[in-house]
Image (tube, rainbow, N blue to C red; front, side, top):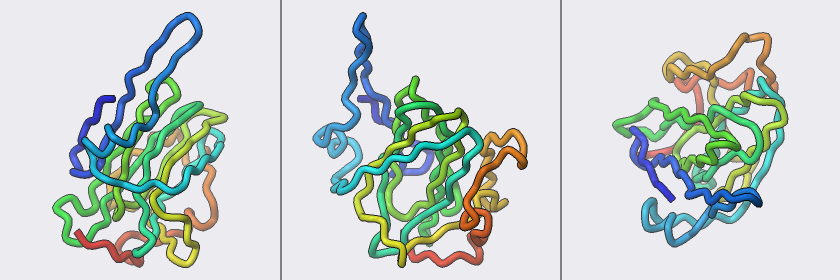
Length: 185
């Protein structure tokens, strides 16, 4: 596996070694010893999966402490633009984001530590997105911020506003300046 640290320390792109032959391909999607050697100890406790159509935008979501979540995300089928935004108060990269295209073809993964808002825009129909988390979903501690908050300057690769498919919760999320979050750097 190739571990690539992004411009935001702690956020990593992971590229697997893929072995192809006449039968298809094989790769290790997660290997704890390699992960901990490069990134550090994380105790993933749950795997989640979603299927979405092109144009779906999910996010930007987070969970408040003490249920903040680190995530290891990837696409099994299709493609997304995956985004992580640093919302840790006092961080030198506060409000900055990393955006990475994750596809079934490139098999890249993105590791997002606790203290980040996360979201993705689905670029192909029938996209299957999967991720590991280190804390369970806790509805009483969930939070979100507007995907199009100008403070972030994210290019979501949206073809048209009319093509977006979003939940009411995400459409009505507050700007970061009005959001409730409790992450310290």
